[in-house]
Amino acid sequence: MKRRDVLKAASLAFVSTLTAGYGSNDVNEKETHKKAKIKSSAVPKKRKNSKVVVVGGGWAGLSLAKHVKIFAPQAEVVMVEKRDHFVSCPMSNEWLVDLVDLEFLTHSYIDASQNNNYTFLNATAIDADKKKHILKTSRGEIAYDYLVFAVGIEYDYDAWAKGDSVLEERLKNEYPAAFIPGSEHITLKHKIKNFKGGNFILTVPEGNYRCLAAPYERACLIADYFMHHNIDGKVVIMDESNKIRIKDKGFSSVFNELYKDHIEYMPSAKILKFDLDKKVVETDFDEIHFEDASFYPNVKAPYILEKLHMTRSTPFNRVEADINRNTYKVKGTNNIYVCGDARPMGFSKSGNTAFSEGMNVAQMIADEINHKTPKWQTPVTICFSLLSTKPEREISLYTEYKYTKNDGMDFQNNITDEAWKTNGLGKEKVAYNWAESMFKNMFY
Image (cartoon, rainbow, N blue to C red):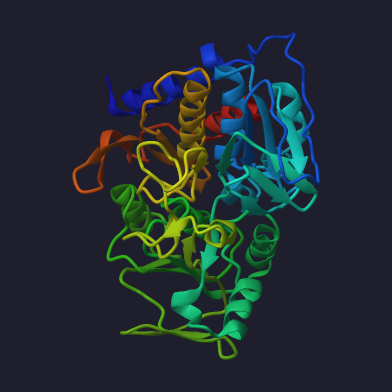
């Protein structure tokens, strides 16, 4: 069997679990769809069935809410999300250059909750009383038996701004990273469409940032756009690492062969100084002038976890969730969990990883509800990167994880397909098919 076929088989094996068995909507039809009880009372009333409250409606939160209802149908599940609709970060690079439309990325939380038998509460989590088991939101208080934070990431500009709030705000608003869905992506798309030529800087942070491959894929698609629209522009990739850390062979070869005049890759290029008025950045070795940019800083766990004293520093990032890596429980608690991109483990901060992890943590919570012994399972990372549009070419990766001694982690069952010239993944639109299957599973 060819490497391409092995990878596709592994990916399909994972996706098949989403449409059969526990991936189907086989919750008891007689199970009532209970509404969230938003009360001002600080003391929750006793409930017949366990109540699971999920904060966050990203890939991990959506997966967890759905799968708790599948693994423990008797549980009451409420998903709290501040946005009123979902926009996918995975596949958003393709939207930047018009390969997919906004409808492809945008989905309804109401559809997700109605189709999967849980409650969607459009509110912002602002605090929690861990002793009384109450989540405080912008719409009132919710009592819980189990609380899960699947809150994703925030940007950490500390290494760049060093306390300079004016610089931080200028970086956020004038040169957004566009790795948190919303206005940032719209602004970046306008930048690409209106670019007249010169240097367009993209940065790649150190540590474990959201979607390791995405900055390199984005560089390829922007360079491809410049080529096909006769824009005399170059994408300058300033990577804080000393090499490409994922699918290196595929990305390096495509930079050199397809985009040698349109991509300049700079390893070990940590920005030490910004002059945004003159549009110049400085490193230890270079001074780079630019016409436009998208500066991607380090990432961290969101502020709500810091406020609740649930964070710690790790070798990867300055602020991550402080959880037991085997149970996902916040240290010092017995019923509060964190999963998805806010976790401290070195797993990929990406959609498929978060989805599979949400499913795994849902199983752990359901096991506790059903008086069984929870067991840790590996998340699964499936990552497709589009390299060009005419023709479409892709490279891909499948991996699982295992723990090692001294809080270490390693990869297992790792398969990559970086033969973009011959593998046919782009022709078969494998990335699009994967995304469609995931959206269908989470929402429909």
